[in-house]
Image 1 (cartoon, rainbow, N blue to C red):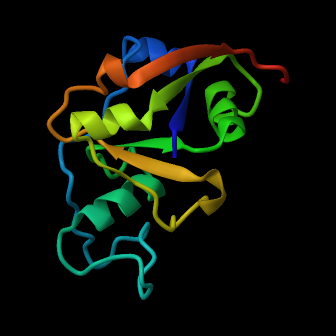
Image 2: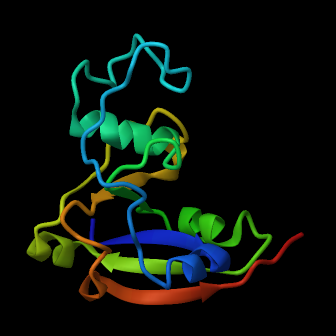
Length: 148
């Protein structure tokens, strides 16, 4: 893994001031019985609070499960799809150097996803950081929507 990509539409990018930030402060998550969004009886979730649950919660719905994890992908086309809302609007693709994440001591992980496993998701843990450090971003490319 040399680089990771993150696609962001222009509205979201403006809302966060061009910063990549997590939606929550917890890097561990416990799923509770009766949670209708969580697939139970599989090998992906743990019983107690864990990073693994937080990553899966983020994958299921990052708005419902605010964690310190932020989604990236190893696939440029997937990032472009997110940046443009499937081609309907303009956006940006952030290109991040994995070696800089390593130097900064930032954890990242790819794991089997509970939803949309075809997106080649890699989760970067921003615990201890207000935002992804600019030093990790090697490029911010504008992407034009082409449809709608």
